[in-house]
Amino acid sequence: MNDRSDPDDVVLSPHERLALRRIEAELSADRRLTRRMRHHMSRRLRRPVSRRWLPLSTAALLSASVFLVVMGVRTSDPAVLWCFAALWPLTLLQGFRLLCRASREGSDQEERGTPWR
Image 1 (cartoon, rainbow, N blue to C red):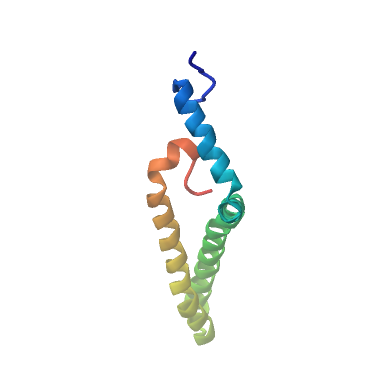
Image 2 (image 1 turned 90 degrees about the vertical axis):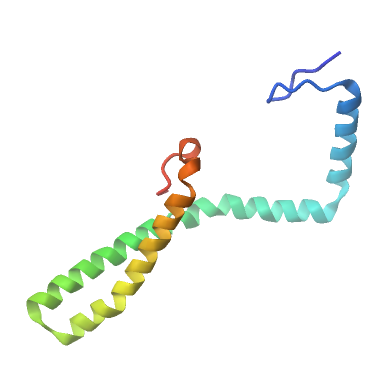
């Protein structure tokens, strides 16, 4: 008798189900694999929190850069212009990282929403 309880609607024969249960039992007995998988899953669960910092930091750096360039042009103060010169490459780097992330995750966009999150 075939079982259709699999979420992918894959029909397994009794022999295949028995083999699958044996493989799962062997894998669950491997403590090192369990520890590595737990570590991997905890990293994946933490990732969305850290992923929010890139767009926020890029927006903050862009705002600060725009402010510094406007103030530097208006006042012609060399210190303000040097601050802009130091901050602008960091802003470009963060923007580049954000665009790389968006292009890398563009194919997964339908599944998870926008790539900017």
